[in-house]
Length: 449
Image 1 (cartoon, helix red, strand yellow):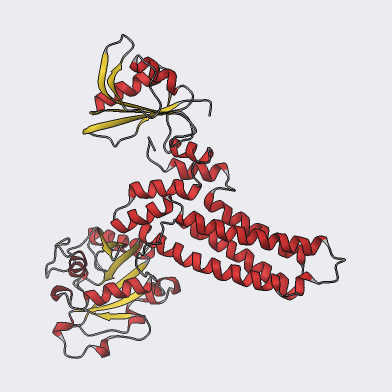
Image 2 (tube, rainbow, N blue to C red):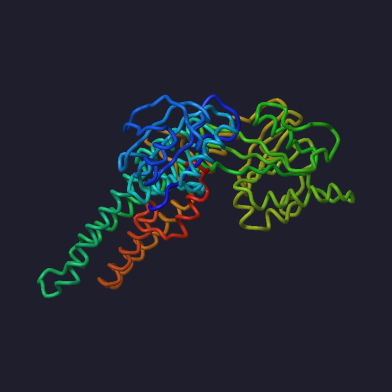
């Protein structure tokens, strides 16, 4: 990179220490001017930071790392000053005056990727580690940063390359007496690749669940106990609970964790026919939340006469996509004698008494099972939606290649499908990535990282 970039690398606000980070070919000249001496490599200098007139802006620690032995692979200067925003702004302004440009979001990590200090999955793990909101998510991000995810992808790519070599040989030497396409090796290797890919997809799905979690929407008629259930799940009085129907108007959002899996809970307005304009708006918002949910908990009041669900909730039960995400939760079971007759077999159902905390543990277990979450183990790693999409794309091409082999023995088509599968996997680590993709990924990082 020909330019030198600089940014405040610590979070906005006041703190004991703030860091200004500089990367690029002008680091050493900038350091010499700013410190009034040439810093040693990898040595912590405690000294004043000087302005253009030689007056101290602040004093702190200066560290100089010579490329390629640095985070970005370039010369890097880190200035540890007092953490006041005015001081850091003055220090950054001085560095820019000496020739640096202000860094864009994620530009330091992008340079580390472009200089082969890390692959794309590891770079994304940095952002995931910063944004982690649980111990489990942080541990998974560290595992990815240390290469756990990339290693499994590389192993899959290497096996795919070996299979491509064998298929290409079968195509290039058709005069050989052995029919390579039907000797069973390619079919066996393809089946093994698919099995290995399926295992990686499962682990990646677990990592994505820990990173992104699932959105749970509590829906139902007024006074079915949605707010009481929200309070039971969060274990605090998040929502106002009264006997008055229609208390909840705007969606109320809370976040919890179940064994490391984040849940984004949304309590919605009770759905019913209403002439109240404000309540109508709340009901419209409730339907918007329902349509975007990963799981819908439809609450029914066990103490009230039960209607035919298909007729009572046609918008839910008549929509296949919404019905597939539906769990029926019969609440207030402490007020009735018979419970089993209230639980239909057409959709998953649970019986609870939210105010008494009955059935809440079983409901949490159900939510983990319905999303296929198995918990966080030592070898797990963080993953993003684009990783899942890339793995599914690779699986599609491997299955297509398997079909071409079994049905048509078309070696050229098998080879092309294997190439496409490898290209999809390479998008995970960045071995093959478009500039647009890189721009979207690093543009989501915080400035200074």
